Length: 371
Image 1 (cartoon, rainbow, N blue to C red):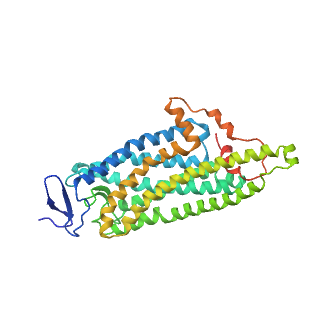
Image 2 (image 1 turned 90 degrees about the horizontal axis):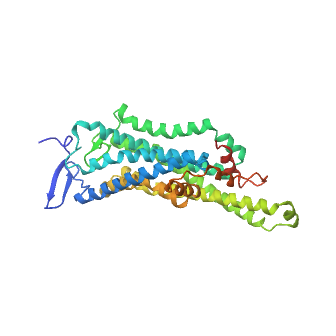
């Protein structure tokens, strides 16, 4: 009989239609029935199709529409690229989870290891992109136009994007270059991730969580709470200044206030849309990171489902853009009709009227950096 290290599964009780596997060393049951794996596989296939198509739409929309070429959308494109890469490798997760006994392609173990490598990199990049989006929204709404232009130069944007990929790449290379962790087929969960049998697997779990979760979450929470407080204070000021004076009417103050309110509302609409993206990712990510850090009986059964929901997040973002982002909605409508989005329409959001208030500086700064 093989040792438990090399063959950690023994067959459980079976009936005519269902079966489950038990870890011979720990007595862990992850999948009680085969239909559980079929449901997870169906979720991953759906995420692959919808995510690939949706993220293609996002990338094409930014490429075709000048209105969408803003500093914030640099990070949105980065997020879409990471999600697209995730979707392209999800079919290998389906192959792994439906395999009856081990990785179904014994001569291509490197494929499963590569799929696990890509997942570590792309999801790390995704949460880094969301943190950069949140910080960008905070700077764009609460800081001066000069500060925005000084921070978001072309060179600094490129460095931010490189950083968002470099950190998770180093995390993914750790098991490749050292003995800490091992990427490949994990028999217990029937997935292409990192292998539990590695002596330092628990340390690698902690490394992945520490690199990809707490700092980004703190940045996201801080940014959106700061935006909320600033919006409340600024809205009160705008409400007090809403009643125009006679001199204001003569000098065009009413038109100026109307323009500022329009730009302010649009800023908030874009920010709320991006907040929905962040919330969707956090809701999908938190159960997964909880399950890989907390080792109890229920987390072993939770982890495959948490992982499936995390994978499905790759197809959620384009749906949110299509339903709530004003510019992406317009671009998607043109693309569905096989028309090129009107680049000239970007002028409708750019005001040449001198504005003393700071409420429009974020979007105006983004417009100033468009090609």
